[in-house]
Image 1: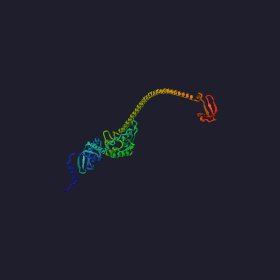
Image 2 (image 1 turned 120 degrees about the horizontal axis):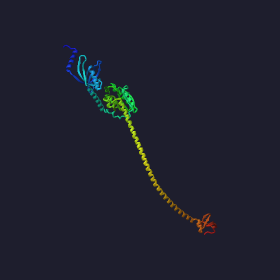
Image 3 (image 1 turned 60 degrees about the vertical axis):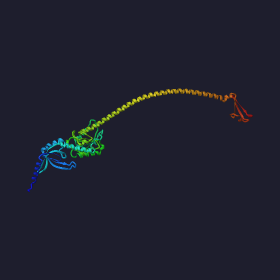
Image 4 (image 1 turned 90 degrees about the vertical axis):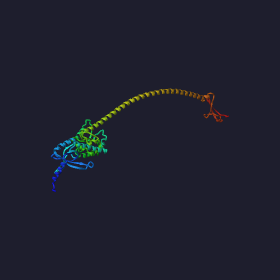
Length: 412
Protein backbone atom coordinates (compact mmCIF):
# COMPACT_ATOMS: atom_id res chain seq x y z
CA UNK A 1 0.00 0.00 0.00
CA UNK A 2 1.36 3.38 -0.97
CA UNK A 3 1.44 5.82 1.94
CA UNK A 4 -0.44 9.16 1.96
CA UNK A 5 0.82 12.49 3.13
CA UNK A 6 -0.40 14.28 6.28
CA UNK A 7 -2.02 16.96 4.18
CA UNK A 8 -3.93 14.30 2.27
CA UNK A 9 -5.04 12.68 5.52
CA UNK A 10 -6.14 15.96 7.03
CA UNK A 11 -8.05 16.83 3.85
CA UNK A 12 -9.81 13.50 4.06
CA UNK A 13 -10.70 14.19 7.71
CA UNK A 14 -11.84 17.71 6.80
CA UNK A 15 -14.03 16.43 3.99
CA UNK A 16 -15.45 13.70 6.17
CA UNK A 17 -16.30 16.20 8.94
CA UNK A 18 -17.94 18.57 6.45
CA UNK A 19 -20.00 15.72 5.05
CA UNK A 20 -20.91 14.39 8.52
CA UNK A 21 -21.62 17.83 10.10
CA UNK A 22 -22.80 20.05 7.24
CA UNK A 23 -25.00 22.26 9.41
CA UNK A 24 -24.42 24.77 12.19
CA UNK A 25 -25.12 23.89 15.81
CA UNK A 26 -26.03 25.81 18.96
CA UNK A 27 -23.31 25.02 21.50
CA UNK A 28 -23.54 25.70 25.24
CA UNK A 29 -20.06 25.94 26.79
CA UNK A 30 -17.74 28.03 28.92
CA UNK A 31 -15.26 30.20 27.09
CA UNK A 32 -11.60 30.29 28.08
CA UNK A 33 -8.31 31.76 26.92
CA UNK A 34 -10.06 34.60 25.05
CA UNK A 35 -7.58 36.53 22.87
CA UNK A 36 -8.21 39.48 20.57
CA UNK A 37 -6.00 39.56 17.50
CA UNK A 38 -4.83 42.91 16.06
CA UNK A 39 -6.51 42.00 12.79
CA UNK A 40 -9.88 41.96 14.59
CA UNK A 41 -10.29 38.21 14.94
CA UNK A 42 -11.07 36.57 18.28
CA UNK A 43 -9.42 33.30 19.25
CA UNK A 44 -10.67 31.32 22.23
CA UNK A 45 -11.34 27.89 23.68
CA UNK A 46 -14.62 26.24 24.52
CA UNK A 47 -14.46 24.03 27.59
CA UNK A 48 -16.82 21.86 29.61
CA UNK A 49 -16.34 20.88 33.26
CA UNK A 50 -17.79 18.08 35.33
CA UNK A 51 -20.51 19.72 37.47
CA UNK A 52 -19.49 17.72 40.54
CA UNK A 53 -15.68 17.70 40.39
CA UNK A 54 -15.24 20.81 38.22
CA UNK A 55 -12.52 19.00 36.29
CA UNK A 56 -12.33 19.59 32.54
CA UNK A 57 -14.01 16.89 30.46
CA UNK A 58 -13.93 18.48 26.98
CA UNK A 59 -12.09 21.20 25.07
CA UNK A 60 -12.18 22.68 21.56
CA UNK A 61 -10.54 25.64 19.86
CA UNK A 62 -12.80 28.37 18.59
CA UNK A 63 -12.64 31.28 16.17
CA UNK A 64 -14.79 34.37 15.64
CA UNK A 65 -13.74 36.09 12.50
CA UNK A 66 -13.40 39.85 12.34
CA UNK A 67 -16.58 40.61 10.39
CA UNK A 68 -18.71 38.58 12.81
CA UNK A 69 -16.88 39.59 16.00
CA UNK A 70 -17.33 43.32 15.34
CA UNK A 71 -21.11 42.78 15.56
CA UNK A 72 -21.33 40.03 18.19
CA UNK A 73 -19.13 41.57 20.88
CA UNK A 74 -20.95 44.92 21.35
CA UNK A 75 -24.34 43.20 20.98
CA UNK A 76 -23.46 40.66 23.67
CA UNK A 77 -21.94 43.17 26.11
CA UNK A 78 -24.71 45.73 25.72
CA UNK A 79 -27.42 43.11 26.23
CA UNK A 80 -25.84 41.27 29.16
CA UNK A 81 -23.85 44.05 30.79
CA UNK A 82 -21.07 41.46 30.91
CA UNK A 83 -17.73 41.79 29.17
CA UNK A 84 -16.86 39.09 26.67
CA UNK A 85 -14.11 37.49 28.75
CA UNK A 86 -12.92 34.09 29.91
CA UNK A 87 -14.95 32.29 32.54
CA UNK A 88 -18.48 33.00 31.35
CA UNK A 89 -20.91 30.56 29.80
CA UNK A 90 -22.27 31.27 26.35
CA UNK A 91 -24.68 29.84 23.82
CA UNK A 92 -23.13 30.23 20.37
CA UNK A 93 -23.95 28.99 16.89
CA UNK A 94 -20.93 27.16 15.48
CA UNK A 95 -19.86 25.32 12.42
CA UNK A 96 -17.38 22.47 12.67
CA UNK A 97 -14.16 22.86 10.71
CA UNK A 98 -10.99 20.91 10.31
CA UNK A 99 -8.14 22.80 8.71
CA UNK A 100 -5.21 20.93 7.22
CA UNK A 101 -2.74 23.15 9.11
CA UNK A 102 -4.61 24.41 12.18
CA UNK A 103 -6.65 21.31 12.94
CA UNK A 104 -10.07 21.02 14.59
CA UNK A 105 -11.88 24.24 15.46
CA UNK A 106 -15.37 25.65 15.96
CA UNK A 107 -16.21 28.81 14.05
CA UNK A 108 -18.79 31.10 15.70
CA UNK A 109 -21.42 32.77 13.55
CA UNK A 110 -23.98 33.91 16.19
CA UNK A 111 -24.53 34.23 19.94
CA UNK A 112 -27.57 34.23 22.26
CA UNK A 113 -26.99 36.73 25.13
CA UNK A 114 -30.10 35.55 27.00
CA UNK A 115 -28.37 32.27 27.80
CA UNK A 116 -25.48 34.08 29.48
CA UNK A 117 -27.90 36.30 31.37
CA UNK A 118 -29.72 33.21 32.58
CA UNK A 119 -26.49 31.53 33.58
CA UNK A 120 -25.33 34.61 35.47
CA UNK A 121 -28.64 34.66 37.29
CA UNK A 122 -28.36 30.94 37.98
CA UNK A 123 -24.89 31.47 39.41
CA UNK A 124 -26.21 34.20 41.67
CA UNK A 125 -29.04 31.98 42.82
CA UNK A 126 -26.62 29.13 43.51
CA UNK A 127 -24.44 31.41 45.63
CA UNK A 128 -27.44 32.79 47.49
CA UNK A 129 -28.79 29.29 48.07
CA UNK A 130 -25.42 28.13 49.40
CA UNK A 131 -25.25 31.11 51.78
CA UNK A 132 -28.77 30.35 52.95
CA UNK A 133 -27.97 26.68 53.54
CA UNK A 134 -24.95 27.75 55.57
CA UNK A 135 -27.20 29.99 57.67
CA UNK A 136 -25.34 33.23 56.92
CA UNK A 137 -27.41 34.84 54.15
CA UNK A 138 -29.34 37.26 56.41
CA UNK A 139 -26.83 37.71 59.23
CA UNK A 140 -25.75 41.22 58.23
CA UNK A 141 -29.34 42.24 57.45
CA UNK A 142 -30.33 41.22 60.98
CA UNK A 143 -27.81 43.58 62.60
CA UNK A 144 -29.47 46.62 64.17
CA UNK A 145 -28.67 49.69 62.12
CA UNK A 146 -27.22 52.45 64.35
CA UNK A 147 -29.32 55.51 65.13
CA UNK A 148 -26.31 57.79 64.58
CA UNK A 149 -24.03 56.22 61.90
CA UNK A 150 -21.28 58.83 62.12
CA UNK A 151 -18.09 56.70 62.17
CA UNK A 152 -17.87 55.33 58.64
CA UNK A 153 -15.38 52.81 57.25
CA UNK A 154 -15.29 53.26 53.45
CA UNK A 155 -14.15 50.52 51.09
CA UNK A 156 -13.43 51.91 47.64
CA UNK A 157 -10.67 53.14 45.37
CA UNK A 158 -9.08 56.41 46.42
CA UNK A 159 -9.27 57.66 42.83
CA UNK A 160 -12.89 56.68 42.29
CA UNK A 161 -15.17 59.58 41.33
CA UNK A 162 -17.87 58.10 43.54
CA UNK A 163 -15.59 58.43 46.58
CA UNK A 164 -15.28 62.20 46.15
CA UNK A 165 -19.02 62.50 45.55
CA UNK A 166 -19.70 60.58 48.76
CA UNK A 167 -17.35 62.73 50.85
CA UNK A 168 -18.82 65.93 49.40
CA UNK A 169 -22.36 64.77 50.15
CA UNK A 170 -21.79 63.87 53.81
CA UNK A 171 -19.38 66.73 54.44
CA UNK A 172 -21.73 69.44 53.17
CA UNK A 173 -25.08 68.12 54.32
CA UNK A 174 -27.54 70.99 54.95
CA UNK A 175 -28.41 69.70 58.44
CA UNK A 176 -24.80 70.12 59.56
CA UNK A 177 -24.40 66.59 60.91
CA UNK A 178 -20.80 65.58 61.60
CA UNK A 179 -19.42 62.36 60.10
CA UNK A 180 -16.04 60.69 60.57
CA UNK A 181 -15.13 58.81 57.34
CA UNK A 182 -12.02 56.69 56.93
CA UNK A 183 -10.89 55.14 53.65
CA UNK A 184 -9.84 51.50 53.31
CA UNK A 185 -8.31 51.29 49.84
CA UNK A 186 -9.45 48.44 47.58
CA UNK A 187 -9.72 47.56 43.88
CA UNK A 188 -13.29 48.00 42.70
CA UNK A 189 -13.05 46.24 39.34
CA UNK A 190 -11.07 43.45 37.76
CA UNK A 191 -9.88 40.07 38.90
CA UNK A 192 -8.34 41.32 42.16
CA UNK A 193 -11.56 42.91 43.44
CA UNK A 194 -12.62 39.91 45.52
CA UNK A 195 -9.23 39.57 47.25
CA UNK A 196 -8.84 43.32 47.71
CA UNK A 197 -12.27 43.96 49.26
CA UNK A 198 -11.94 40.98 51.61
CA UNK A 199 -8.55 42.32 52.75
CA UNK A 200 -10.16 45.72 53.45
CA UNK A 201 -12.91 44.04 55.50
CA UNK A 202 -10.26 42.24 57.52
CA UNK A 203 -8.46 45.53 58.25
CA UNK A 204 -11.72 47.09 59.43
CA UNK A 205 -12.47 44.04 61.56
CA UNK A 206 -9.24 44.59 63.50
CA UNK A 207 -10.61 48.00 64.61
CA UNK A 208 -14.35 47.33 64.44
CA UNK A 209 -15.03 49.09 67.76
CA UNK A 210 -14.03 52.39 66.10
CA UNK A 211 -16.79 52.29 63.47
CA UNK A 212 -20.58 52.30 63.28
CA UNK A 213 -21.05 51.15 59.68
CA UNK A 214 -19.13 49.99 56.60
CA UNK A 215 -19.90 51.32 53.12
CA UNK A 216 -18.73 49.72 49.87
CA UNK A 217 -19.00 52.19 47.00
CA UNK A 218 -17.83 52.65 43.44
CA UNK A 219 -18.65 55.33 40.90
CA UNK A 220 -19.08 55.10 37.15
CA UNK A 221 -17.90 52.19 35.07
CA UNK A 222 -19.84 49.73 32.97
CA UNK A 223 -22.36 47.21 34.19
CA UNK A 224 -19.95 44.45 33.23
CA UNK A 225 -17.63 45.61 36.03
CA UNK A 226 -20.22 44.44 38.57
CA UNK A 227 -19.57 40.77 37.83
CA UNK A 228 -16.74 40.74 40.38
CA UNK A 229 -19.28 41.42 43.14
CA UNK A 230 -21.12 38.16 42.36
CA UNK A 231 -18.54 36.32 44.45
CA UNK A 232 -19.30 33.64 47.01
CA UNK A 233 -16.21 34.34 49.15
CA UNK A 234 -16.82 38.08 49.17
CA UNK A 235 -20.52 37.65 49.94
CA UNK A 236 -19.79 35.14 52.73
CA UNK A 237 -17.31 37.55 54.35
CA UNK A 238 -19.71 40.47 54.11
CA UNK A 239 -22.72 38.47 55.36
CA UNK A 240 -20.86 37.50 58.54
CA UNK A 241 -19.29 40.90 59.18
CA UNK A 242 -20.15 42.23 62.68
CA UNK A 243 -20.93 45.79 61.50
CA UNK A 244 -23.86 46.79 59.23
CA UNK A 245 -22.70 47.12 55.61
CA UNK A 246 -24.20 49.45 52.99
CA UNK A 247 -23.48 48.87 49.32
CA UNK A 248 -23.55 51.48 46.60
CA UNK A 249 -21.76 49.70 43.78
CA UNK A 250 -24.15 49.59 40.82
CA UNK A 251 -26.94 51.17 38.91
CA UNK A 252 -30.63 51.00 39.68
CA UNK A 253 -31.38 47.96 37.54
CA UNK A 254 -28.30 45.99 38.61
CA UNK A 255 -28.28 43.93 41.80
CA UNK A 256 -25.29 41.82 42.73
CA UNK A 257 -24.96 39.03 45.28
CA UNK A 258 -23.25 41.57 47.54
CA UNK A 259 -26.37 43.75 47.45
CA UNK A 260 -28.50 40.79 48.51
CA UNK A 261 -26.50 40.09 51.68
CA UNK A 262 -25.71 43.67 52.75
CA UNK A 263 -27.63 45.31 55.59
CA UNK A 264 -28.77 48.08 53.23
CA UNK A 265 -28.35 48.76 49.54
CA UNK A 266 -28.34 52.10 47.69
CA UNK A 267 -27.96 52.82 43.98
CA UNK A 268 -24.91 55.08 44.03
CA UNK A 269 -22.32 56.51 46.46
CA UNK A 270 -24.33 59.73 46.79
CA UNK A 271 -27.43 57.66 47.54
CA UNK A 272 -25.48 55.92 50.33
CA UNK A 273 -24.53 59.32 51.75
CA UNK A 274 -28.16 60.43 51.57
CA UNK A 275 -29.21 57.27 53.42
CA UNK A 276 -26.76 58.04 56.25
CA UNK A 277 -27.86 61.68 56.44
CA UNK A 278 -31.54 60.70 56.45
CA UNK A 279 -30.90 58.20 59.25
CA UNK A 280 -29.25 60.93 61.33
CA UNK A 281 -32.15 63.29 60.56
CA UNK A 282 -34.77 60.72 61.58
CA UNK A 283 -32.96 60.00 64.84
CA UNK A 284 -32.53 63.71 65.52
CA UNK A 285 -36.22 64.40 64.88
CA UNK A 286 -37.14 61.48 67.11
CA UNK A 287 -34.99 62.93 69.89
CA UNK A 288 -36.64 66.33 69.41
CA UNK A 289 -40.05 64.66 69.60
CA UNK A 290 -39.08 62.81 72.77
CA UNK A 291 -37.66 66.02 74.21
CA UNK A 292 -40.90 67.86 73.40
CA UNK A 293 -42.96 65.11 74.99
CA UNK A 294 -40.78 65.18 78.13
CA UNK A 295 -41.11 68.97 78.38
CA UNK A 296 -44.89 68.75 77.87
CA UNK A 297 -45.19 66.03 80.50
CA UNK A 298 -43.04 68.00 82.93
CA UNK A 299 -45.06 71.17 82.38
CA UNK A 300 -48.27 69.19 82.75
CA UNK A 301 -47.04 67.59 85.96
CA UNK A 302 -45.81 70.92 87.33
CA UNK A 303 -49.15 72.58 86.52
CA UNK A 304 -51.01 69.64 87.97
CA UNK A 305 -48.73 69.72 91.01
CA UNK A 306 -49.31 73.42 91.55
CA UNK A 307 -53.05 72.95 91.26
CA UNK A 308 -52.92 70.01 93.61
CA UNK A 309 -50.75 72.00 95.99
CA UNK A 310 -53.23 74.88 95.93
CA UNK A 311 -56.10 72.48 96.50
CA UNK A 312 -54.20 70.81 99.33
CA UNK A 313 -53.31 74.23 100.75
CA UNK A 314 -56.94 75.34 100.69
CA UNK A 315 -58.02 72.05 102.20
CA UNK A 316 -55.27 72.26 104.83
CA UNK A 317 -56.24 75.83 105.70
CA UNK A 318 -59.90 74.89 105.98
CA UNK A 319 -59.12 71.79 108.00
CA UNK A 320 -56.69 73.71 110.20
CA UNK A 321 -59.25 76.47 110.79
CA UNK A 322 -61.92 73.92 111.65
CA UNK A 323 -59.54 72.02 113.95
CA UNK A 324 -58.36 75.22 115.64
CA UNK A 325 -61.97 76.33 116.04
CA UNK A 326 -62.89 73.04 117.63
CA UNK A 327 -59.83 73.16 119.84
CA UNK A 328 -60.54 76.79 120.80
CA UNK A 329 -64.06 75.82 121.84
CA UNK A 330 -62.66 72.91 123.78
CA UNK A 331 -60.02 75.13 125.34
CA UNK A 332 -62.68 77.66 126.31
CA UNK A 333 -64.66 74.88 127.93
CA UNK A 334 -61.53 73.60 129.63
CA UNK A 335 -60.66 77.11 130.80
CA UNK A 336 -64.15 77.71 132.18
CA UNK A 337 -64.20 74.30 133.76
CA UNK A 338 -60.68 74.82 135.14
CA UNK A 339 -61.62 78.23 136.48
CA UNK A 340 -64.77 76.88 138.15
CA UNK A 341 -62.90 73.87 139.49
CA UNK A 342 -60.11 76.12 140.76
CA UNK A 343 -62.59 78.42 142.40
CA UNK A 344 -64.30 75.53 144.08
CA UNK A 345 -60.97 74.01 145.04
CA UNK A 346 -59.58 77.19 146.55
CA UNK A 347 -62.89 77.94 148.29
CA UNK A 348 -62.87 74.45 149.77
CA UNK A 349 -59.25 74.81 150.81
CA UNK A 350 -59.94 78.23 152.32
CA UNK A 351 -62.76 76.78 154.40
CA UNK A 352 -60.45 74.01 155.45
CA UNK A 353 -57.73 76.45 156.37
CA UNK A 354 -60.21 78.56 158.26
CA UNK A 355 -61.36 75.47 160.13
CA UNK A 356 -57.76 74.50 160.86
CA UNK A 357 -56.96 78.05 161.90
CA UNK A 358 -59.96 78.07 164.19
CA UNK A 359 -58.93 74.69 165.57
CA UNK A 360 -55.38 75.89 166.07
CA UNK A 361 -56.59 79.04 167.79
CA UNK A 362 -58.83 77.01 170.07
CA UNK A 363 -56.00 74.58 170.73
CA UNK A 364 -53.35 77.20 171.36
CA UNK A 365 -51.86 77.42 174.90
CA UNK A 366 -52.86 81.08 175.08
CA UNK A 367 -56.51 80.24 174.50
CA UNK A 368 -56.37 77.36 177.00
CA UNK A 369 -54.68 79.56 179.58
CA UNK A 370 -57.39 82.15 179.11
CA UNK A 371 -59.89 79.53 180.31
CA UNK A 372 -58.21 79.46 183.77
CA UNK A 373 -55.63 76.81 183.04
CA UNK A 374 -51.89 77.14 183.80
CA UNK A 375 -48.68 75.45 182.64
CA UNK A 376 -45.95 74.21 185.00
CA UNK A 377 -42.40 74.33 183.67
CA UNK A 378 -39.26 72.71 185.04
CA UNK A 379 -36.05 73.86 183.51
CA UNK A 380 -38.11 75.32 180.59
CA UNK A 381 -39.99 72.09 179.92
CA UNK A 382 -43.65 71.40 180.60
CA UNK A 383 -44.28 69.16 183.58
CA UNK A 384 -46.81 66.52 182.53
CA UNK A 385 -46.63 64.35 185.64
CA UNK A 386 -45.84 64.86 189.31
CA UNK A 387 -43.46 61.94 189.15
CA UNK A 388 -41.03 64.08 187.22
CA UNK A 389 -40.74 66.43 190.19
CA UNK A 390 -38.57 66.06 193.24
CA UNK A 391 -38.87 67.85 196.57
CA UNK A 392 -36.87 71.07 196.45
CA UNK A 393 -37.23 71.47 192.65
CA UNK A 394 -37.87 74.97 191.46
CA UNK A 395 -40.77 75.21 189.07
CA UNK A 396 -42.34 77.99 187.06
CA UNK A 397 -46.08 78.40 186.64
CA UNK A 398 -47.38 80.19 183.53
CA UNK A 399 -50.83 81.84 183.66
CA UNK A 400 -52.89 83.56 180.98
CA UNK A 401 -51.42 86.74 182.30
CA UNK A 402 -48.07 86.52 184.04
CA UNK A 403 -46.14 83.70 185.75
CA UNK A 404 -44.79 82.73 189.16
CA UNK A 405 -41.80 80.87 190.60
CA UNK A 406 -42.11 78.35 193.42
CA UNK A 407 -40.34 75.44 195.11
CA UNK A 408 -41.66 71.93 195.62
CA UNK A 409 -42.09 71.31 199.40
CA UNK A 410 -43.79 68.00 199.14
CA UNK A 411 -45.00 65.73 196.38
CA UNK A 412 -47.72 63.22 196.78
